[in-house]
Length: 144
Image (cartoon, rainbow, N blue to C red):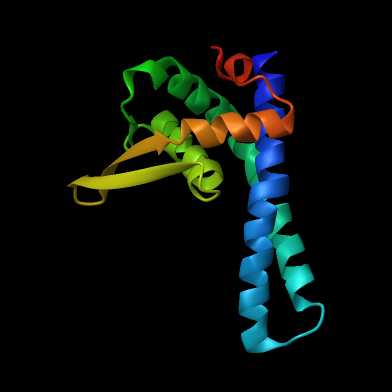
């Protein structure tokens, strides 16, 4: 059940929040190149890319939002170490889908040459609103 709700939430974020962002970026980029159908084509391609990334990163997304739900009451950011492949994938998923769509923020800190820690802070009121609009019970989606 939690994975189904997490999938619905992720699909909603891509379809509504990222699709709008991709469309605006495509329109801006195409004005400099060529008017016409270019914005719609570019946005459609970008949206397809996000959907493919969602399929690939879904397990990491679920693990990350479940970790976020468990840490929510502490009120501290989730910290991920890019040296750990699982943590790196979780950070990638949250940055790609939540930070990019303005549902979270991220701060990075270089620990050594090419080695980073990522601190992700979720905007819980915005996440709750997004989950409501998606018809998703957020506590269920966050359940481990």
